Structures are given as structure tokens and as C-alpha cells.
Length: 133
Image (cartoon, rainbow, N blue to C red; front, side, top):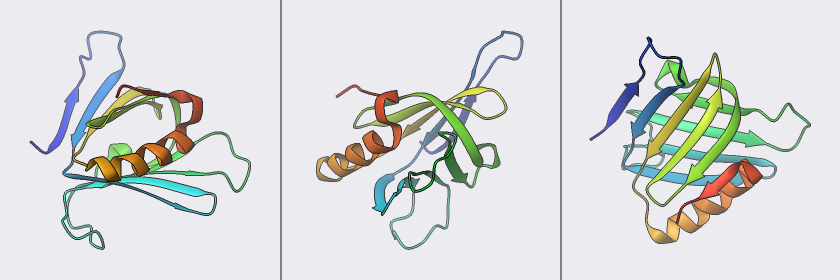
């Protein structure tokens, strides 16, 4: 199942939860810039459908923010991160934009690719990431 499943009850004071499901996950680095990306396209050079990018840079001192880019306009811009949970099946991030939101990203990834993905996520999120596997 692909897409977005918002889970939120406006009558209860709680964080919003958004779950996104993608077929592919990948990670990359260029100097002091790190990125994890998610999409459903079999061509890694093309983004024709739903996608999500999470970026972090260490080149310049900043306010510990992350940059999100997505086809979903709720998930675009700079955000703060409270915590992250990583497994071979999902990445869950507690982030602050307009309010606290838990973003759970489910994905498919091979064991070999997951090792690189895990390395990049650990660099990006540091001591904020908890590993389940």
C-alpha cells in the first residue's frame, strides 16, 4: 500500500502522525552534506511520483535543523528533530514544524543497501537515533 495515512484526532491534545510508504529507500553523501531519499520510481534518475528527501548539512554551523522536500506540501522546509527510530522496514522521526509530528516512513531496501542507509542515518541524526534491528 502506498500513499499517506494521516492519523490525528483534533479533539485530543496529541501529536499528529503521518505515515508514508515507498518502494525504495537510498542514502547518499557529498562532502558535509547527507541525504536519505524515498520514492516509488524504478529509475533512480527520475522522480515522477511520490517522493521524500531528508537532508542535513554539517559544512556551516546551523540551528540543528533538517531540510525536507516532498511531493506532499506538509513535508517541505526546515524542521527540528526530537528523536528518530530506525529499522530495516521503517524510519520514524519526531519532528517540529508548525507542531510536533511523527513521520513514519516505510520502505523496501536490500540488506546490503540498508547497511549504507543505516550509516548515513546515524551520521545525520547522531544521538537522536534509536535502532530497533
